[in-house]
Amino acid sequence: GKTYKFRVSNVGIATSINFQIQDHSLKLIEVEGAHTLQETYKSLDIHIGQSMTFLVTLDKSVGDYYIVASSRFAEANLTTTATLRYSGSNRKVSGQLPIDPTMDLDWSMKQARTIRLNLTANAARPNPQGSFHYGTIPVLRTLQLANSKSILNGKLRYAVNGISHINPSTPLKLADYFNIPGIFDLNTIKDVPSSSSLVKFGTSVIGLTLHDFAEIIFQNNENTIQSWHMDGSSFYVVGFGNGIWTPDVRKTYNLVDGITRYTVQVYPKSWTAILVSLDNKGMWNLRSAIWENRYLGQELYMRVWSNEQSLYTETNVPSNALFCGKAKHLPKF
Image (cartoon, rainbow, N blue to C red; front, side, top):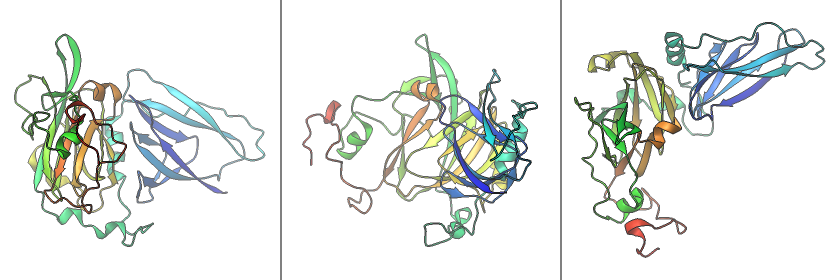
């Protein structure tokens, strides 16, 4: 009859998982630091880089039960198991493994829409989560980011809006902080995908202003699921949909209690929309959480800028920072 808290993280590099405990319900309470509405699920999809916390009440007959993590949206059906053992159990696990359909995209998307913010939770903060009314804030910038896969110079590469990212020899943050020219160009990557299928190499940096409120649409035209992670800020997940995003689908956005998180999935041939308040000055990485994709170019940087030089908006360069490239000979603080 006791209730236990489980926190499950998908620390893999390529595959979404589905998690469940045989004959038990999962009451979701937290996602990546945000308190959720306490909905109950038979199983939960957890995508690459994501974490979820749920409560499990042991109210079944004394015995052993399967704990199952199985692959989702992958060609191979991979499964790993553990055992939940009640105190005093002498009954071994039995029966078929509880595994949900591997490729049920509609089911997964519907579940994702039910994961919403608990607007009355306080936690370690002075105000309830719902006190920030993100749905009433005017959007100052819209970015449409489309991922793609192609062959460049005979090798596999991934890209965003036609640019396959390459890191310069001088770290982008140092180049920005010290105004070192020739390292990056804010016009390399555009706010919307090109109508051309041409892909080229480039150092992808998007210029934004401190305290901008931005809408970002992740457009996935591939047949594989995507997972995106943002450094520097959490964001509100406001919409999922099939096909190509259009401005008309904004009327379907959740502008009241969308969950805040750092990593979000984009289903095959689908889109995901987020809203983010860019209140953290810096050079922040926005990348695929799938390691192969990120390593081969599916990432970019957001330069969140303000000309105010103050420790209130940004700390100094750490004393142990490695100065290399064109910053190699600059004096340290």
